[in-house]
Image (cartoon, rainbow, N blue to C red):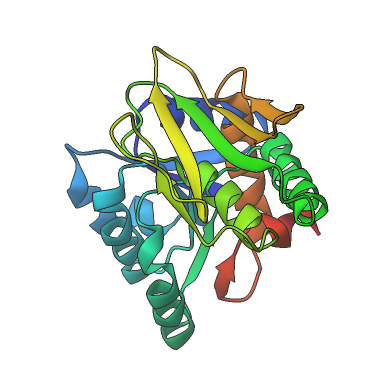
Length: 241
């Protein structure tokens, strides 16, 4: 499989290594200093492009890839609010995008565990639920896309919570709000902690990434999954089926 990389930072380098180890070919590498590469024959020859950049550039990168006829796998978060609008654009133009807030298999299992626990805790109103997420200091968005996905899983299943709110020392949470504390420390790949707390005890579930390897491997597997698929929007739930 021929792969183009959009974003050649730490994640791009790890994805490149894993893709080569799995027998694929990297035909194009695009970063901030060579944007003209989107118009190259090498980029257009790719079976799929894998994109990890920043929220303000992601949609522009997708459209440039689609203009070249290249499907996209992306793990960039922070732009999720316009996802419904983008899905409409994808459907109307027969574009292809595989997007996930997190490509790690372990995290996606954690997503399911989170939803099941939330459904169980819905009836136990004496427990309040909060979330803490910790990422490296280079992480641009807060809360992370993974934290938002986890929050959505809770809100879908706990009737007493109506919205998530990024918490800080100056704000007071309302009972119907799900507080998310977003910490940025050192080189932490990603930690997510969900706590149900009552006056008598606490229940905590936690996922802690040990490196970025799991995210990168998942992105390459998603690219492998996407090749040959009809145009459309795909996610990790499609892959894990």
